Image (cartoon, rainbow, N blue to C red):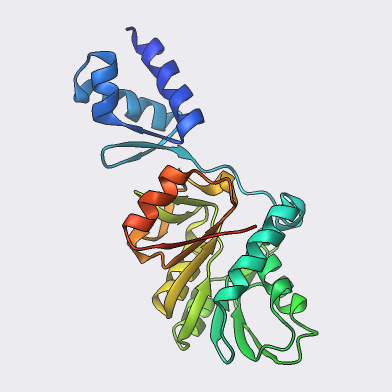
Length: 252
């Protein structure tokens, strides 16, 4: 098989499966793993994949502005939010990271539940404004209008002064090998700080974010405590997450 033919097959597998494994490709093509690794390097350089140990992952999609993301898959995010808020208990202190799914989670919080919510997203704070039992703490920092969040050293320092029961983490990509990742390096620093300062990590993810990797790792896969997904998410992938200790919750 010619190099271009191998590349076409690898791109098709990344599109359909979200990942490829080097030794499986070598057996399939009848070539050495060194040849496959060279193929993956070339495809990664062209932006078709992200290399990880043992193979490669499909790249995460480019993030849309927050205004567009709130509208995208709105029904699915509402279902995910309804399931995610079941993890809350009265008097919890919770980080709610920026993100359109987390915005839906904020809106789904019961109005009679006493909580302290710490957020880096003004829109999430606004969504909780009429929750009389919720104490809202808005983190400072440099505001990014496209991401809908604040970030920077000021934000990280503020996070490090708080310890939370849960963090609802926003993410554009989550994978069994690479973990939870983000497209923006500065934003990833804030996310990492929230994870470090929380007893449990919760990610609610639409199906298009599963099996993908973005450039900046936020948390290793074993750090994920709870994963909230749609009912039609890949059962094989979810079984792998369960095997490593993550509790998987299905939205209905």
